[in-house]
Length: 579
Image 1 (tube, rainbow, N blue to C red):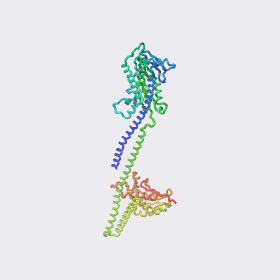
Image 2 (image 1 turned 120 degrees about the horizontal axis):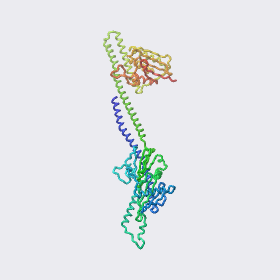
Image 3 (image 1 turned 30 degrees about the horizontal axis):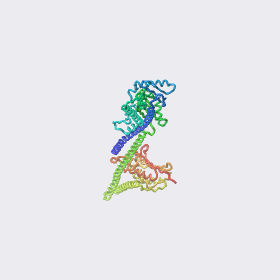
Image 4 (image 1 turned 90 degrees about the vertical axis):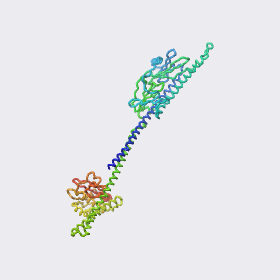
């Protein structure tokens, strides 16, 4: 059994190690998938914000040069426009209203700072490329930034890196700004090689050139402070340079971007967005997943933090743990069942082996006695008739013992095969019990035991088979005598009484009883409470197993228990005979 336990333990370890690695890998995969799903959602939200900014930027870059600062802003987050002329003069136009003078002063201040080349940029911004998104760990540390669209990364890009770089809004804006810069460069080169205009009288021959459209550079951006952004462009018109720009309110722009990206949909209830410039302080949303996005030029001084609560259906490691727990439980139960089956099979095989040895010994003992007494009688060496009668008695007793042993083996074999049929008859139990006791009384008294009988004379009729009942009583009485030899008293009690409409038949001995660890096994075939090599009691381990088989065939119930005051008692409950 020790080797079986060791083999099962090694099998359990062999299953536990790969299962543990599998669970660990599954949990990691679920966590990665969950994070990537939320990252994808964050990328889509920021991409929509970039698209909205690209649309606004395209509208602003498309504004004509003439009258730039004469039109009232249409965007709700635009504070107003300004223009710095070649002579340094400033003209502004803000949104009308009660605070118009304050807006005008703000615009003039922004233009003055631009004219003085006060960029207002942060000194130490996050080490993050414009137009990229990074996930923020719970400790607040940013994950490595993904490469921006159109940029090469020396690392080997994964599928998720490629997904993070796929920001359509950034790509379209970068492409448009590149085209604008190329157009300016091309126009400047054309002017450098084009001859100067010829004068014809007081008219300029190249008047159409002087009147052609102004050359516009792409918008550039910078943060004025924590609450305002400045977008500006350089305009070259008639060989003179102008600076034009618009001042944006960060809070209004944030509300605009939030509405464009989230709106009033389901996602809005799971997302929290905050915006900041280098002059302000970033606030981290309280959420399961937090991502920071730095917007592309010319809004690269503006960053946003998106906090996402766990989205429904985004995967959960609890399912992996629950499934793993089910697998572990199934594996443990399977190993226990395997161990139990193997242990039972090995124990049963061992008991069968002991049974063969016991039967061989039990058969050999009476045969040896019969042969010895027979040879002595045959050879005429028994001097007296009294001795001859004694030897005849020994031969008869040993023959009966041998017959009972053989009958038990044959009976149990028929029970195991299912070929033992019983012919039940309804009748009184008392006469058959008395007949059996009279047959076994000589054997009991020869062993020095007293046979006590307590039979109720008014027992109700029950269904039973006479031969089966006789064999049951023979085995029970023989078993009681066998295991009570070491008791202080020597007696066997057989009693029968009416109980629950039927009859309860019991056989009790005066021995020490059965150890608690053996009580649950005494009716199992071939089971013996003593080791085969050191056992003190004779027997094959079939007696009580045969009793149980015959009793159950008669429709009755059998059980055994230790009695207070000493002794072991086997009870047989016969149900009441039906009509």
